[in-house]
Length: 183
Image (cartoon, rainbow, N blue to C red; front, side):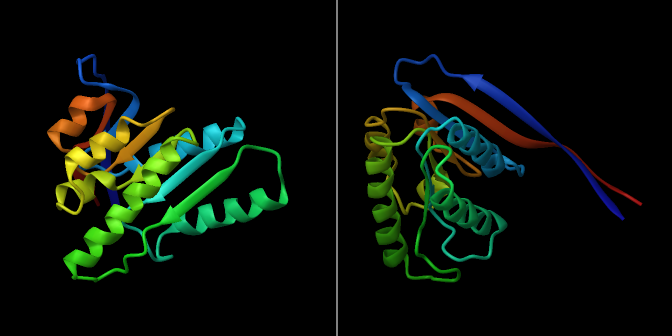
């Protein structure tokens, strides 16, 4: 059996009055949003930029990308050839249902996000859009943080609040174009 699908990626440049320079939102239902953001991060790192990745909802080492970035961080310490790479995982464990704890951890990640936006470029807020959608973060607080950016910031997540799209300079949307099973 082979699963065959096509992902349609649309790029939009927002020229609205409220846009914040350097803010990119990667949204949509299809896979590939985080991978696209990681590619941008690695490219900048290789060009000697200081970069940061903040996972808003990946606390455990269950994901291939967490292991990959852990190894890049270790390798970077041994080989000072490129920029500075750092990543931080939100400490929420899978299956935690205490909404106040999740909200507290999300706010701490948002404060770290704000600090990073003043130092590194790009900064990736992986799945920050989902934290807004689930009401763990207030959209107005996130927008205030985005206004402090000195470089590029990329936010990912399945859906994005309309206000986040309005302030994003670029919007990249990943959606499934065609689904079918091939036997």
